[in-house]
Amino acid sequence: MGSIQTNDGATAGHTAESTRKVIVAGAQLGPINIDTPRSEGIRRMVKLMDDAHKAHAKLIVYPEIAPVTFFPRHILEGEELEKYFEREVGGDITKSPNLKPLFDKAREYKMDVSIGYAECTGDDHVHFNTCIYYSGQVDKVVSKYRKVHLPGTFEPYERKDATNQLEKRYFKPGNLGFEAFRAPELVPDTLTKTSGAQPNLPDTLGKGDPIVGMIICNDRRWPEAWRVYGLQGVELMLCGYNTTAWAPELLGTNKKISTQEKAKAEALFHNKLSLTYNSYANSCFSINVAKCGFEDGKYPLIGGSCIVDCDGEVVVEASTEEDELIVAEIDLGMCRRGKGKVFAFEKHRRVEHYGRIAEQTGVREPEFL
Ligand code: CDV
Image (cartoon, rainbow, N blue to C red; front, side, top):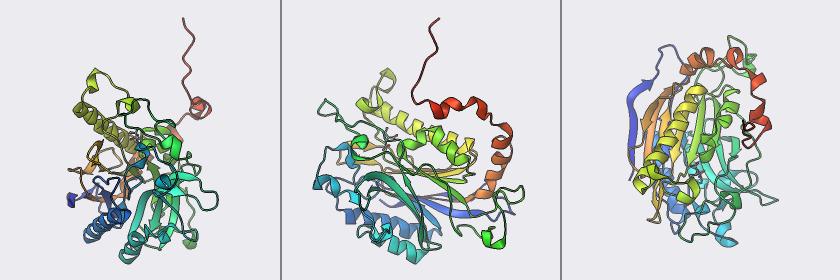
């Protein structure tokens, strides 16, 4: 446990004049079993944060529902279910007793943190699959995202030994949309309101504080989610995931993926395909972080945590299915090329032909001949 992968100290897309370089980290977690105490999960996460601090990272990203086992595979109710959810204290998740040790450390290190957790809201007790962005630079939670695309089923599968994915049962679909936000002071020398600068002018594009977006696991397979962020000029996408490596009921099966080994290879391929293509098509970097390995010795989750650059190339990738830190120095200034040329949306998009994307949910085939 506890290895570190870096991009060999090389700057991904270094340009001498750019001031938008920052060292970032993804904290891949190995399996967390159903009987693993929450405090143990948090201890391992703090250890990875210590390593990220030593590597001079200013941002660390953790997986979906990070500190506990991926409980939506189990049929749970009452206290057995509620115990997996986090609650804000006085409207502040950094004070939740479970997560506080992690945020206390982030405050000490002045490190930005994105972390996924199961959220139970204050008054109305609604459940969401959530992540937040805490800025260690200014000691404040600056954004929250609630997973929009919930995979799986409401009812468990009939076959008793099938692996369930009961996210539709345990969570409401996210109600916060895909709102990009700026990460304060993550890179130096940015334009801000107080300097009197206006965004969206030719000479101020890409010069404010970094524009960040968050998605959770299954969301990464939906180009619509990425494009909504792309339209807000996103430079850095963050994505935590728990992706099963073998679940024929959930994912379907055929000859090509008839064994666990082949199914896992395909799951890893689709993971990378989604992350690399959508990073390229929206000219943004992405930090993508797994919880992985065999939870409870029998539920396989893929690894493949990676940092992808804005040309869709993998900069650094995890090599284990255990706790492992991936680290890269990225240059957000690199995003300008794609945003200004091939994916200059304002020059090339044809929204008059895109109506169906927002008006229609399912498929409607053409009339038969
Ligand atoms: N936690 C997830 O959202 N998992 C899904 C399922 C389909 C494996 C995923 O897209 O990875």
